[in-house]
Image (cartoon, rainbow, N blue to C red; front, side, top):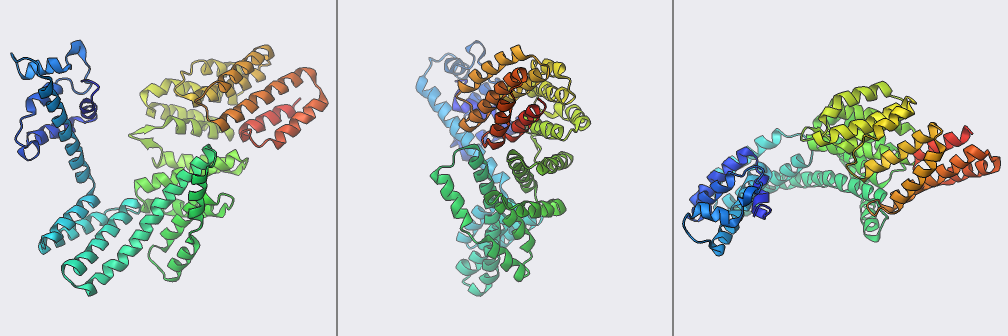
Length: 487
């Protein structure tokens, strides 16, 4: 039973939630008069790990504790597990409703309207208006405003029969519905952009992108400005945010979005702040992959901003290891070695504990390489305990570069072959990534051979091939061209 759905659910409860769940289970309103507390009390003894020590979580063991002296009844035990699991699901639903004031308002408003409880309806409206006045711009704000206004309009029109009084709510609800749509869409198109970069574009992805492109967002912005709408600047912000994803070649969208966000980010809630910073960073990363170096500095400033203001940098108080790695590599690409050392000292403790040792070793490998201390770089890279496939790829590339700088040709030839074997036979590596990394090692082998033969014609051909290559990652291309140019 230790790996059952019930136990997995109970594992997810915090201490306070478990206490609340005990009260919930004891309530006759939810338990239909059945007493599930003895069963829950036995399970509680194993909270939070629910380790099955000495088979203590076996159904037979639990049953013996609940019903001493009775023979084990599988059906009774199954019913207990099933009913307590249903209560756990109902508890999660109640918790979700309590945590989501907009959803609660919708359900309460609907129920009160059916009963024509006018005084209670107005009390709910006042409560919702007080709540939304505390919010900042974002999906929660616009969605709650829409819910509030559409229900106010519905109350006057459907319950009171006063269509004249529903006018204001109908107009405002349309405005908030549109703003909520733009906020939601700005997230969706960012996801489409990432999928488009990471994977081969299929018909479904193309269709979704073309559908968004067909919408006349510019006309919407112009109309909002013409009518001096209160939210016209926000409409323009979301317009630029959406266009950043679907028309990456026009950089004006990025810079207008960034300027408005830099000046007004405090107007937005934490979720929108985080999403906007991630969108800006993703745009920079994509432009850098295409070889536009000016976005290196822009991304560096965005990273400093997100760290300083704790926006889009932490989840449950911890920095994501992929972001940690991106920040280090970006800073070192600008020769910000001292800043990178400060970052490692300050932010390594803010990684998840199991990631700290290996990510610190990887970061120090990068820093030592930047300092041209290639031997120390390799020493640190050898300490990296791989967490995922990306870590292995980063270590493979950086180690190969260090071996090249140390003139360890014989060892590097072997390392190139083993790296190609690792990449070629690893199904976890996405096809485009696999092709790009295989290209790097193929070019590196040619470069290493030319380092020994000094064949000018072949060197010229290699430089030409590198310049024309559309698959090789730009940072790898720059390094290979730099080394080829020094031969």
